[in-house]
Structures are given as structure tokens and as C-alpha cells.
Amino acid sequence: MNFLEERIVKDGIVKEGNILKVDSFLNHQMDIDLFNQMGEEFKRRFEGKPINKILTIEASGIGIACIVASHFHVPVVFAKKSQSINIDGDVYVAEVESFTHKCKNQVIVSKKFLDENDHVLIIDDFLANGCALQGLLSIVAQAGGTVEGIGIAVEKGFQQGGRIIRNFGYQLESLAIVEGMDAANGTVQFREQ
Ligand code: G4P
Ligand code: NA
Ligand code: NA
Image 1 (cartoon, helix red, strand yellow):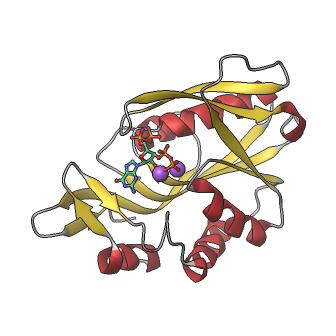
Image 2 (cartoon, rainbow, N blue to C red):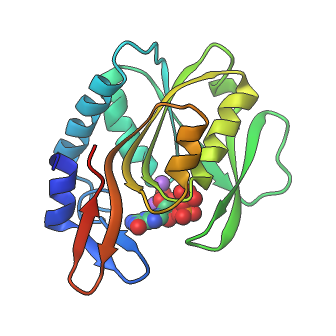
């Protein structure tokens, strides 16, 4: 097990409905030393890529993206969730459906902060069905930028997102891939990487 898998075993809580709660260290209270280890690991896995920007999505991707960015010495842009229908032409827009929350959001990024010169590393806390990630990929495509890679903290390997994104040919690196969870006895199985 790597450092993140060990932390999930120690402090993650398995809920009914295949939900893994990691809010004591990842997406509510945040362990910055852990985020720094994640940053070092992503730096290693994406070594040699000409990354000049990190892109994430609010809310819980932002904290991780910022600490990861301090290892790459590049700025972070986060896509904003917006329900507004009167969006002006100065933004890229993508539709993102949340299966967990049963709602649709538009996510937007200002055209000022992403263009064809950008070589982007996308960072997020969770990958499940991949809707959020597909929205971010659409936004980089609209900008004419290049996706150099995708770094995820926790991938739910039994949902479809990871397979879809890898089939597109992207370098997708997930620090922990959960293959199964058992709420009754609180156990988590990880994919061997
Ligand atoms: P998808 O983007 O991969 O399609 O994810 P999905 O719609 O299935 O999930 C919706 C939200 O729930 C996402 O956060 C995602 O990160 C989160 N999520 C999915 N599975 C789990 C889980 O097992 N544990 C936890 N803690 N979160 C999970 P969001 O609402 O879009 O963003 P945010 O505002 O929380 O950052
Ligand atoms: Na989340
Ligand atoms: Na997220």
C-alpha cells in the first residue's frame, strides 16, 4: 500500500451506497503534509511534461490543486460551478452532471485564464463516473490547450470514469484506486498498481 492507501485504511470511513468518507484528511479537514506527499508523487509521475497550469473544479479539488501546484511552480485555475443561464461570451462552459447529487451544473472558466498556449495538468480529489473530469477536458479543448495529464487522489475503480478517460488516451494517474468497499465491516480493497 502507498501512503494514501494507508491513510484511507486508517482514517477513511465506508458508508452505505459505496461512499468513502475522507473528510478528516482530504476534503473537509485537509492534511497539508499529506497533500505535499501527493504533490511530490504527481511531480514524479508527470516528470518531463511541459506543464504550465493546473486546472481543477470547485470545491474540494481546490485545496489539493494548490498544494500540488506548489511542487510544479505554476498557477491554479479552478472551474466554477454556476446555475446561471445568462452566461456571457467571455467564458468557456461545460455541462456537468452529478450522479451523487442528482443535479446538473454548468462549470465555467474565464477565457482570460486558459488558451491555446496552455499545457494543463488536471487535478481532482475524486474520480467516480468522470462527469466532472469530462467537463474539464471539454473546457481545455474549447481553449485549444493541451492536457498533459490528469492526477486524481481517489478513483472509484468500480465506476466507469477511469476506464472512459484512459480509453481516450490520457495519462490518468490515481494515487488510490478503490475496487470495492464493505460498509458492514468497514474494509476497502485497492487495485494493485
Ligand atoms: P463524477 O464527477 O466522477 O461523475 O462524480 P459523481 O457525479 O459520481 O460524484 C459527485 C460528487 O461526489 C463529486 O463531488 C465527487 O467528488 C463526489 N464523490 C463521488 N463519490 C464519492 C465518495 O465515495 N466519497 C466522497 N467523499 N465523495 C465522492 P462534487 O460534489 O462534484 O464536488 P465538491 O463540491 O464536493 O468538490
Ligand atoms: Na467532492
Ligand atoms: Na471534486
